[in-house]
Length: 344
Length: 172
Image 1 (cartoon, rainbow over the protein chains, first blue to last red):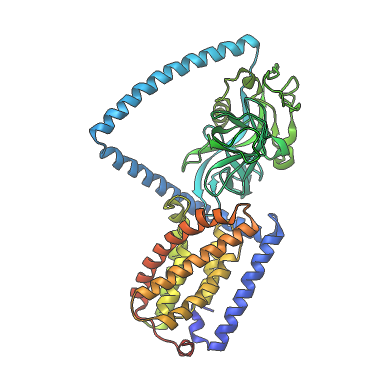
Image 2 (cartoon, rainbow over the protein chains, first blue to last red):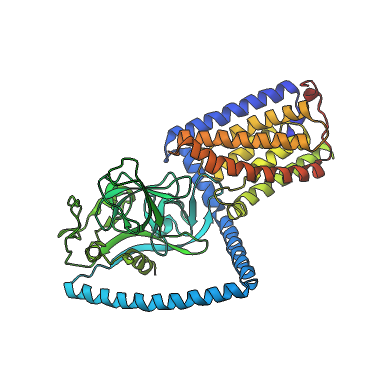
């Protein structure tokens, strides 16, 4: 029967057709909602998405090119005032760069002094972002690596400088990553400075919220938030972002903590699917400020291999790798650095 | 335009909107609002032909569900209902101006988005209904309405003036 062939049918048949199609779609929706993510309807959906992924990469290239053209137009029409402002910014950034380099060298010396080698060694596979979600309700990106490259559902994905999300569906040549900012996302997290644990959730307004943090924990703007690895859904110790706003007072049950994600998933840029993150360090100092540490693995035995990630990803081992840096209170970029290193 | 030509135009249009949904829609999103070309096409065809395109609504609704990570079949269900009500409203209220079809389109798009938002909140997203309406349903409805209006104007040019089919005339 042709797509719009029902104009040739009589009115009663058209009504029957309407009711039948309505019933079929309702049954399919019900089955889809009830079957769970490994059901046949989900499998069909995944397979279709794998078929259209190459098409999506075409769109991504065009979208990336369009963004470049937009930037070029903006640059070409820049006025003198903007140029002067940009020059001033360059001067400030140069100054900041020199200062940052000083801190880096100081940091390196301190680490050597106390015998800490806490760099991550991330095992993973790097893929290109080749597509975005075609609907408004799911914040996902498609990566150009799939099960052929060893990717499985549940693995953590890092952007250039932090966690961006988790693999939700995998096909041989691509995988779909649900971003942390998606309202269906949630990652067990801890605040680096005081080791307080909570859950980072996405929301419909596009912000990340740190929830379930004890009401009496002091949270400050600028505090770094890392994955805690609890529950095994994310590899432990990777950088999520930093606290940018705290609404409400300490002790208030309705306090809202807003986190700015560090990782970005830009089109045609790389992201790393993390198989494993380990440390090579053999000395881990207990964090002096970790009163509420609960023995979560960041004291002496912290780097012995907490394989809680196996629960979801199968091959996701993880270690409290950032912890040595935490005790220094200066390792805010460790996750990002190691992410790039692991991807390379 | 004869029936066969209309059918061919509808199939070609359907293929084009699916390709647009895959290739273009994600990259012309404004904030959280991603345009839904599929919805716009189905509603525009129903209005331009003044006849409910049930099979088109079902097939494209299923395609929409397959392309997204949303509940499969939900958009097909909503598009079928929309096709039915849009056509009836058009037959009942059409006054040969552009205002009435656009009003019908606007209401239909808004209701589809609201129903879809409620469905998402009920099935997969743990967020307040108000957030779902404010941050997703409303922006998407506005964007989709613009897409619908453009598609309707194009469909009118392609299909010509709608003919009243006998069984729809009986609905008045």
